[in-house]
Image (cartoon, rainbow, N blue to C red):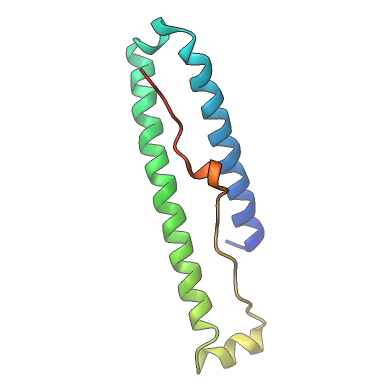
Length: 105
């Protein structure tokens, strides 16, 4: 994954989070919707998805940290320099996007 791909994935994640917040805001206006089994299953799936996204962020940043450490340490820094490897940026979500979607049932 390149830095551009990571940035695009981060932007897509932020758009998804924003859309989910809007969805649940609309759902608050319809109590009968919140009582339906399908909606309850959706809530569980969203919770699981948020957990997977959080894990993926941690994993990505861990791999980036390891990569950045490798390309500056001897002797791998010699190879990294020859092939033009550069340090990569960590994925950082904005503070508001780190907050889980708030759903009240």
